[in-house]
Length: 364
Image (cartoon, rainbow, N blue to C red; front, side, top):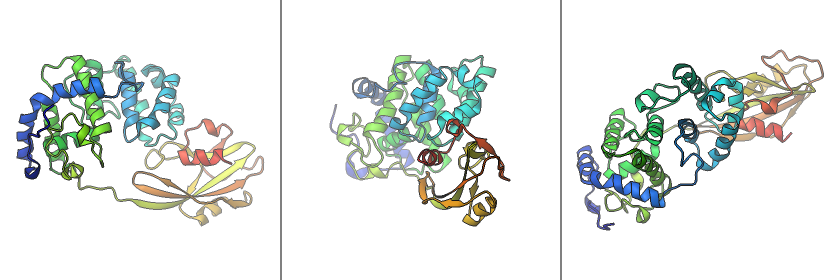
């Protein structure tokens, strides 16, 4: 590999025009070099690799959204044991899917997973569509997931475009446009597609697609890119510069908020009182104990049910919000029925529960 960069360190122009010009300079070398690097140095031991079953690729891609690989591994294995193929997943009740997903977070993924499986069964004869254009019409499958399935399983010459890939390409091309805008997203996505070799065969598309993932996950990382270990150092517009950690640029930031909730935990010989959460919002569609925005509200709802025991508050951290949870435990006499939505569940551990509630109940 040539150690001399094509782009002088002191003169990196991050304009769109400059990025387009760099694209023309690096496009011939980028694809074959990434394929070679991935085959020699990329990741090969993950359970969803080394096979071309679209069901397994789709399942892994959905689970890996916003979730680290180490967290996904156990869930992926359990899901395949429970639902070995797309028909098995489609034929089960959503409640069973939610229960198995409990603790993985971002629960809309589980609802979309179930809905997607049912559409594959009902509209496509149990076989995933073979093109990214058709795949993206299914619930919960965005353009990058569709591209991953199509490239990995069917050899389509299409580029994935998740956050890792956007970071790799923004740095490679010195792309300084604001990715919070749709125009910048479209421009960089078009460049990503131009980097795909027009004559690549299916095997090359597998290595290239996995290589993009591996490069972003292990080398071109967000805060401390390992430029010295990167196979693209001489092609990269910002390798070794402070500018590397500034790219990609995205001005829209999530504003963190905080809320306090009181968890009314009603316990009786019949089990735990649970209600279903609304289909929108935090913990949507899961079973949960009744929630209140104030202690007074929780105590008023529990009036006459028994003595309230206030457990220590604990915090649950979401992507954009901190939840301060205050459990209020009441042992309810046998036969007594709360005037609340829901019902007793002796089998509460088998239900789809929010992870912090499940952990707290298991510690009782």
